[in-house]
Image 1 (tube, rainbow, N blue to C red):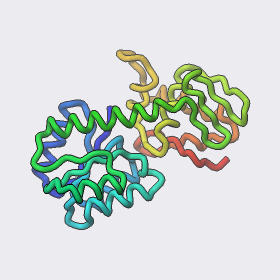
Image 2: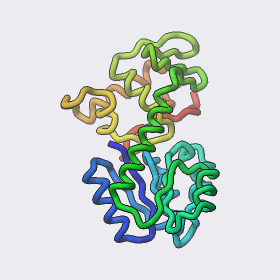
Image 3: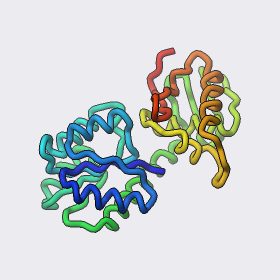
Image 4: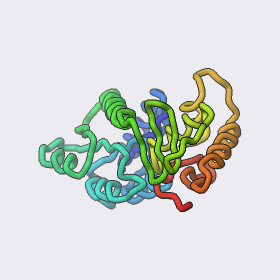
Length: 229
């Protein structure tokens, strides 16, 4: 389940969008200010941010610039909400790294369609990479093989799926249930603690580099692309 962070100072709009996104199947977080959004995005990076340009404390452009400057948030897709839809605003947003924009007023259905399109586009870019390399770690996504310091590491299927998913989404925190959805077949009952067992085994197999996979207390796990040995 993808998690969306909506940033807007209109509480009625936040509630309306949250309801429609949750009904569609998304997990939703809300922020009324730019500073609150930066804190939430940094602590637990979402899969996508819907960001209003006009906020009471910071312009959405400032928030976007900060998101793109930080390692843990620079890869998060951002859809800008603009009240005017002026070409200058749109161009500035795209130049600063926005992925799309929606002009107010808009329908929830339009925004949901844009969110789906951006997430699909981003996922397509990530899945198009046949190899991922982080220092001594290399993952061949086509062959489902993992190498550590040029030596192959044999992983169980669930261990590989967990590692490949986390490594293709670095610095993002995923709950145990979200990882179950990625690594196990649909309609398979898996206890959340089973994820912990597989993560422990995976860390053991990545001998010398267990800190690639970090535990985020109370939230889940994330992949750290720059671990300490």
